[in-house]
Image 1 (cartoon, rainbow, N blue to C red):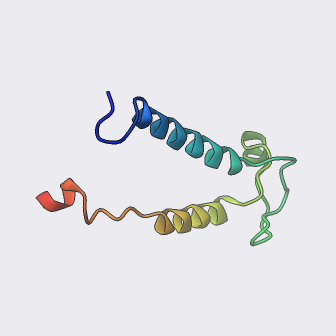
Image 2 (cartoon, rainbow, N blue to C red):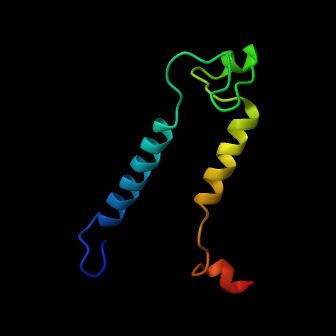
Length: 88
């Protein structure tokens, strides 16, 4: 049952769209192609075990960790208006 001006099923449509966007983002981050023997950033050797485990790997573990940390920092959540932050 929709409330206000929203039609029936509008909330579910919004949830479905959010899930589809998240799946598309995750797929866009997948590596494609052959793994590199040397890191794109620092040119250090990428171990064979890492290349076997992650097809299409392009970064060494250190550079990958730095990249993920930067992405996490830039995608931080503003919790100012959340109920949890008001309870602290």
